[in-house]
Amino acid sequence: MKERIVLAYSGGLDTSVAIGWIAEATKAEVIAVAVDVGQGGESLETIRQRALDCGAVEAYVADAREEFATEYCMPALKANGLYMDAYPLVSAISRPVIVKHLVAAARQFGATTVSHGCTGKGNDQVRFEVGIQTLGPDLKCIAPVRDLALTRDKAIDFAEKNNLPIETTKKNPFSIDQNVWGRAVETGFLEDIWNAPTKDVYNYTDDPTFPPVADEVIITFRKGVPVALDGVGYSPLQIIQEMNRRAGAQGIGRIDIVEDRLVGIKSREIYEAPGAMALIAAHKELENVTIEREQARFKMTVGQRWTELVYDGQWFSPLKRSLDAFIEDTQEHVNGDIRLEMHGGRATVTGRRSETALYDFDLATYDTGDSFDQSMARGFIEIFGLSSKVASGRDQRAAQ
Ligand code: ARG
Image 1 (cartoon, rainbow, N blue to C red):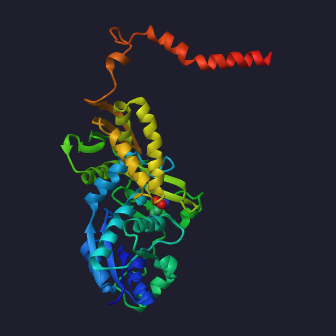
Image 2: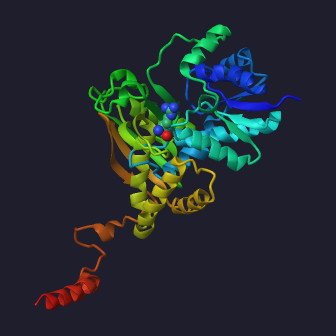
Image 3: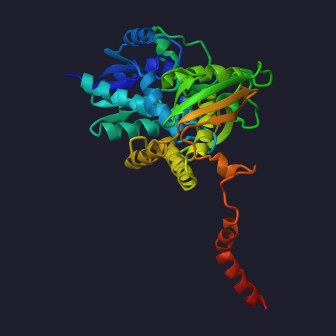
């Protein structure tokens, strides 16, 4: 029997050519795997047919949108996952769900090798291959662009020579990766880091300079997960989609940064994540209201480490799993409503309401009738400052 290789397939030029390219180079049969994580565009049925037309012996397609929203985006939200305080892990969280389906397809069709279309310069190759090694330690990995010298020009030649049913003339100047959590754009003129992004870079967001009237939304959370918008219950996927639409219309969630890749390269990245950024802003504030001070401080450290692990392709690692358990525990009382005003590129919290709040009006109020005994403060401050006071006494004696 021929060896079989599963290929992460997008339906685009490079992975369409990769089907025949891999088959030629390895003499193996290629099985195309397409996973819908909310990237939009063509239907899974169209993509399946193209894979078969390009020479795949089988095509595995999966609508993983709910799975991605629930099991990948929601954990990122609970962690307030922002790499370098800015990037909401859009591509980083989609690789592990794709890996799950690649490994499942490899099992289903008896493949020995998994293949992806990444170059040798990015993070995504690491995320794919570390994930595959972890979930399927017996599986081998190949990357045609990196390992089998499949360049863009060769891809166009190959497609034309073999009459593949795929557009080769359309020139997209950017490398784009998108899903329901957001959109990543790189390369082209953006590689000159002095160049400002042009309007055509953006797709999920409208220009925040000319916003429509302000949009106010009430987001209800249960255990750190958004469950309703303006009182209407939705699934995580529906909430992200709806927030993408509403926050996107206000130009919220445009990000332009020079980012530290795992492989040591600094790269210019433009992201758009309207729903994710608005939801993170709301979630963070509800945490401020409901999580105890020391736990909240430590959660910042844990969330940061979680984010770095996920960025670095360690989604399936033991440490990531342990940090998940901590984060999950902190979300127990993150219940309630956040009112968010969205306007002109900003999502601003204007109200919070929670049955599980630690905010205590009687403790906080400056009006008469508060329950806080101010006479306690004197002694507290005396002791709190004592070690510094003792040390400064010593320093002054030493200086004499
Ligand atoms: N730099 C981002 C990351 O590593 C985005 C990568 C997006 N990939 C792409 N082909 N544009 O998560």
